[in-house]
Amino acid sequence: MEEKQDKARDLTTKQRRAATALVTLGTVRAAAGEVNVTDRTVSRWLQLPAMQAAVRQAEEASLDESTRRLVSLTAGATSVIIRILQSDKATDAIKLKAAALVLHNVVKLRELRQVEERLTTLEEVLL
Image (tube, rainbow, N blue to C red):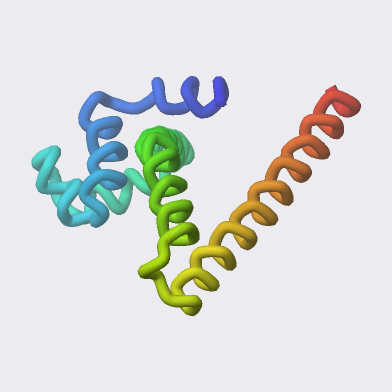
């Protein structure tokens, strides 16, 4: 991550703004308009390793923010699933879908945690 930040420092302010705009606005044209340059200029900047690193850094920051927002909704979502599973009004088909959703996601979460643990172990061995 530090190497990406070092590369991003090699960019002009306008290039860094364009990298962020690419992520938030989604297109070269929109990013170019945001920083008052041509599409071609942004496309040319995207060939630079420092610009590519800045875009990846902006993507990671955006993904981190989205993840935080989604995590904040998990307690409410869990409550909804519990209410459905316990409801006398929900059909068996709806309850089955809710149960399948819970089981699927618990398995997925467990798999991700196991991969993370294995990766951490490997990093400790290699470093």
